[in-house]
Length: 181
Image (cartoon, rainbow, N blue to C red; front, side, top):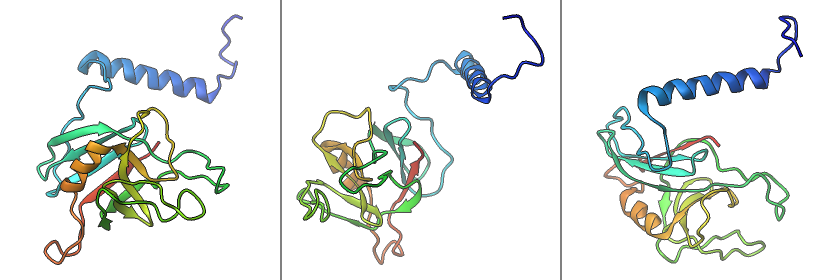
């Protein structure tokens, strides 16, 4: 088909071309970004922080100076949970650690109706949603009812790194940022 300046181009096609051009430009100056590429340091927030990137299926721990301390794989909530007939995405935004449980932590809700699903080293951050260990090996698709699942060794490390609210920290648990899918 010959080119015509009056032919409409779908917005999706234009957006794809722009993203591709940006990616090519970025890779030409910085090299390709891969699953093993460490995240860059971030602007210091004067406090340590955990960032969960649901789109990349990763988490990154930063110290108070904004330097990367540790990274790992993570998955969040799936699009649809048939048992509750609802979406079950992980909430997006900035949160604080609310409370922590140990190696024997279990869900009070799932599986329905009585709970009992293992959630080792759970760290709750929003209305019953937690980061916790998972014995599964798949970190390529979101599978949970909204929690963030990480490997059990990573969950134990996070449990020690993340701080629950106390009088000493002015009832401000460690900051957790969850980035969008």
